[in-house]
Image 1: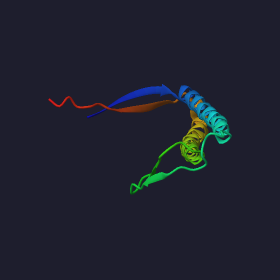
Image 2: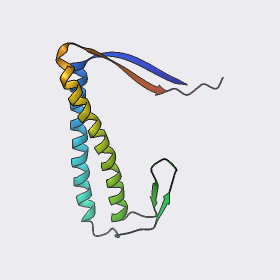
Image 3: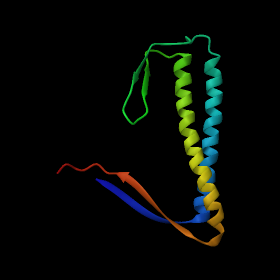
Amino acid sequence: MSASLDVSIDLRELYRRVLENKRRVTEYVKNLYEIYGKISNESNLPDRSERVVIDIPNSISIILYKEPSKEAYRELFLRAIHFLKLEYAIYEVLETRLGKLKDHGFKAMVRYFSDVPSSGD
């Protein structure tokens, strides 16, 4: 069963939240680069490790590594960056569009979705 909640929100507040989330994504990327820099300089990690690729049609491949390695961390880092780039692009578009409307006193209807497990009765 799926539940939803409709909330009316002022566009200025929605715009503020978009800017806040955009900054959060930027901080994630900075932190990832810092962590990746430390890992790539780690001398105890092997360069490569055995991996298994699970290809799922119409989806993202799942890559499993037998043990930690620089290659494994690089792959994980690149996947995270790709998702963060997509998220950032969404906030960039929202910022541009809401920026044009925020000072006109409009309100937006936001729908939050959540999955509610059925009780099985």
